[in-house]
Length: 206
Image (tube, rainbow, N blue to C red):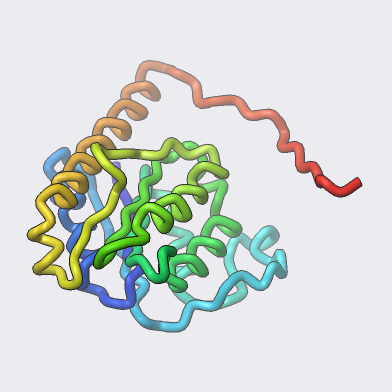
């Protein structure tokens, strides 16, 4: 089993990374492989709504979205991390997630997803809610913790001092590991995956 972790911060080894590595330790303790992909500070454009990815399975913009799309095949779960900017997820992770889910949603359906956010002081719950919406629109079980998945601090050193926040990350890791093992056990026991109806798309304007 493997969990793909996306660091949506421009700082590869900053506060968001510190929180993700705390989860990573727990997953590895349970024998679950992990990979952290850092978006960094390279420009990431938003979705142009061209629809090309529906036909090709990849985005016309050649950046980290296309690097990550193949990784979704082998991932059994995904964790998205972001700093809080103006009570919202970072522009980097928002552009990334819009395009990743438009091009690769079929590779994530049914797989557990979790979001984590790091902030200096406020806005964490709004950013957390924003990221969870990607999972809830795509038939993905959302992995929770003992509190909203957030850490506080202005530096990695300060994040490490947020005892409740770090414990929340470890509990999230435990819950992700438990759910992945439960899904795997269900498959071995012959429990079938959900059967979905053909999607109905309606428009509110008539």
